[in-house]
Length: 460
Image 1 (cartoon, helix red, strand yellow):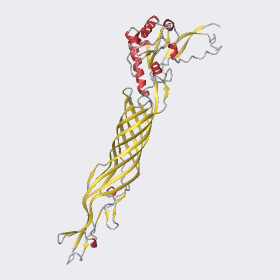
Image 2 (spheres, rainbow, N blue to C red):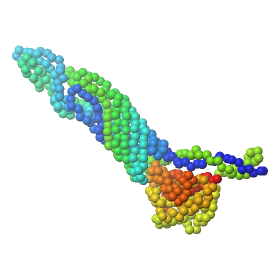
Image 3 (cartoon, one colour):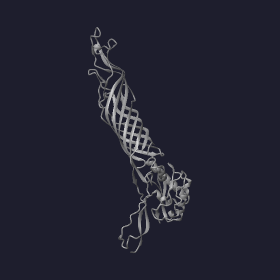
Image 4 (cartoon, helix red, strand yellow):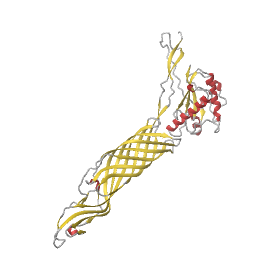
């Protein structure tokens, strides 16, 4: 068999990983939960209520996601009525000696009516999340809301309501004469007759604090406006004298529109479910000339290629020694010259650079290791690309750790560049906590996982 040097195309998998993350959320809140309407009669006040919501959110990457939820909210309003509702006029010969015309009306004096509505929400939204440090992150979201009115009721809480008669011929106003139907009454309760479905838009801003490996405490503000009108009845009178029925303000023709609005302060929790890692390879193509023992003159395969070795790292590969805080990590018995003689794609170079918790700053003890990499790159110009891959332990959120690993990779790259290595020969990659060397079960194991490694990606 004649061996030939033939061109092949090699894919350099130098991309970062994207973190697909799922959360369960639970929130409680309260504030302005108002039944909004305008009325020709009465002085209306803003109402207050409470709300709760459970939700599921799927984040496609470090920052952006979508979600759905189920919420329960109460809404209220108060209106104070001071007006006269005209009734049918007539003659009454029994009250005055000569009889006379009397005008009937139902008087409402400082009558306060409170209306309460309970509703279920289904919000569909897009959400944003940004880590600030190991413990804190902030986020927000916008959503569309479908709301179902579960129930509603009204109640007179104070004031005077009564039928009165005015005799214009004599300038007299008569009330509280039950024998002639001039009576007073109060304390009405009843159910509101509103439409069952409404639609709206909402939003939220929140801050999150990590209180456990998968559990965050949330604090924030949320609000929504349901723009579809819920008004369903248009009674001419608020009080029907014959039926002795009080119908409630929201069901009269002098009430204009009924909408639900809320602005709430919220507290809650966010539970992080198991993470799914999505590798995203970079579309970089590199032409490499190699001598292949597996291809004959007529390009027929004469034997199967050896299975590609998986590029996985373990602590034993580097001779790592765990010592006090500002220590040199490389075992003195490790033959660095043998490490630096490696010249194959996929070979690790030198030893890993280790970092303190929640830090992207280099320690002085790491300079020796990086200087050996500087010497290696200067003496081996045929190494066209070296991956500088950074990793973290599992403390903190996935999104924060991914960002921290990118900062660590850039820190090491900046050091190598400042000591004479061309930046174009370096490929910084942040993997976050997705590629640990161990189970992260102890502080010592987590120390090892907070590392930056070097691996040959391309050879001339």
